[in-house]
Length: 111
Image (cartoon, rainbow, N blue to C red; front, side):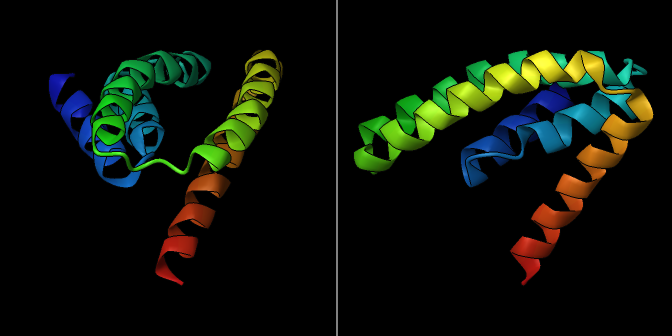
C-alpha cells in the first residue's frame, strides 16, 4: 500500500495529476477494494498529496493566479456533481467511463 502511495504521489508531483489513474486500479486489482469505494477513497488519498504539491509549487511561484480562480470554481462545482453521481452509476458503466478517460488521457499525451 505504501508503494502505491509513493507512485501516486510521484505522478501527482510530476504531472499535476495522475494519482487517481494509479490509485484506483491499484486498489481495485491489487487490494480487492470495490470500485465505487476505490474511486471515493482515491479522492481522499489524493487530497494530502495534492496539498504537498501545492505547497511546494506555491513556494516556487508556479501558478497562473487568474487561471486558478476560474478553473477552481468550475472544479468545485464539478466535484460536487461527480461525488453525487458516483454512487448512482453502475459498476460496469463506471469502469468503462474510467477506462475511456484513461485512454483519452494517454492518447492526448502521445499525440
